[in-house]
Length: 116
Image (tube, rainbow, N blue to C red):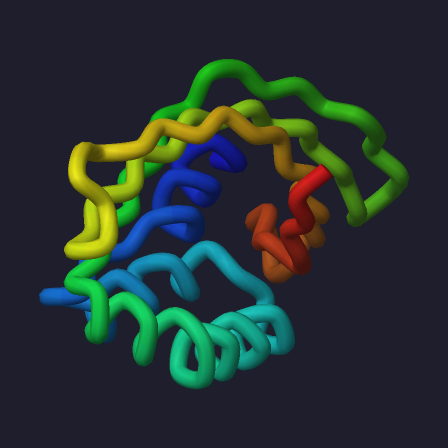
């Protein structure tokens, strides 16, 4: 679940940004979904639209760091490819993120995600 959520959360296409945001928030707790929507609206949308940006994400590896009752932390390694009008060629960046999960109504939902 964390891998599918990370791919959905860490990608967007300027041409379908609203749909990408909604697809990503399906994996999130209500509180984090609201934060994510606001960040997308205030930061991602203006830049993605201006530079016709497309960001794709590929999972490399993942592992559980911690589980404590109804909370868990997962470490995810991803490759992200950025295409935009500002780049001559696509750029690939490798990174790691830490994802916080919350057991909510019988499913794990993303409660936060941070680059590390």
